[in-house]
Length: 441
Ligand code: ADP
Image 1: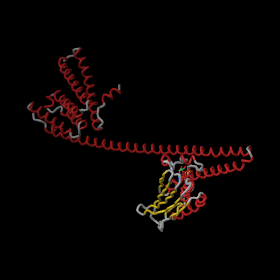
Image 2 (image 1 turned 135 degrees about the vertical axis):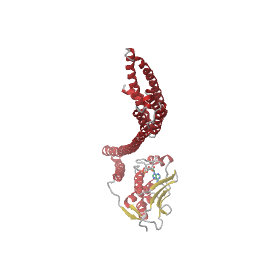
Image 3 (image 1 turned 60 degrees about the vertical axis):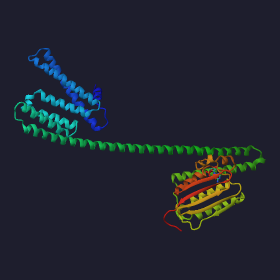
């Protein structure tokens, strides 16, 4: 029942001011309709039982029906969204009822107090200033009614009084509207804040989920990568124990190879995890990249010589020093130069440094004339455990972690790394490191 009534009192608008006025009008109209209906039932009984003076009551019954019809029209208009029109008709109906229920009393100024009601209602359901319009209409009615009865209109109560009420009503309605407006603004602000916080929390949650997924994938990748060397170790150990003694040297060589693969894998995994958890704080100092590149060049020269590769280091003069963790950058460059030596069978490996003053960057390029990287691999080579197709098929050992570690180190220095490659011709890795403002030389 209450649900039904509430639904009936709703109005088809989303403008909060409109909605409030429409609801209020609905409540007033329905309230009046209920009171009128009850009164009409009473009058109906009195007429039915012919209570003395019942003849006079018939006119009241008819005007009751007319009033109910008026209310029905108002409610219908209001439900269609015509709040202003419905409110105007409602006020007219009330004023009409007040006037014609006893015109003589109106002319004599006896019922003027009741005319305050439409003034108050107008300021709330139409607009605060509407109280003045209704006050003007009321005053006109008083004057006409008084003149029609040859009486002197009561200007004090009839006109001044009505306008005084209109002013009070206007001010109160204005204050109410302003308070409601403030409240609405506070509400909107609160809604906005709640929405932003909810979004932030959802994003944080997504990030955590992403990290969790990354961690799980990392653990499963590591376990997977560990399985091959470990099972190879156990197979060859068994063969060593039970197999032909003539093959011992070959088995031992495989065991050594698998052990060093395992060692490298564990070292790489530890490096990555240390960097991620920040267990080892980076040791920043001002150094020239040429010192680092030279160290890496010397460390790889012997291996390059053994493979018959020509290795060259071309340093730029007068490079500004940069704030770096030297050990980490040595590791990064070592991974790149080591790869170049690994994946190149003939030709050369060149390490070159340069300074791009216009973009404030130091560039280190490592280029080789090796097997190159296929197009379908190039977007993935910095992913953890990713080994290119050709690298995977070759006998060249690797963990697929070197470039992931290198990229992490370069990004920690605010730089970036790019790879360019042509299959069968060679590869160039370029590192771009930003030159910080202080300490040059
Ligand atoms: P890996 O241990 O396999 O060398 P990396 O992360 O260092 O792992 O490299 C990922 C993949 O990138 C390699 O498996 C290889 O396919 C490719 N790659 C990296 N450097 C070179 C290079 N200089 N020449 C050709 N391929 C390379």
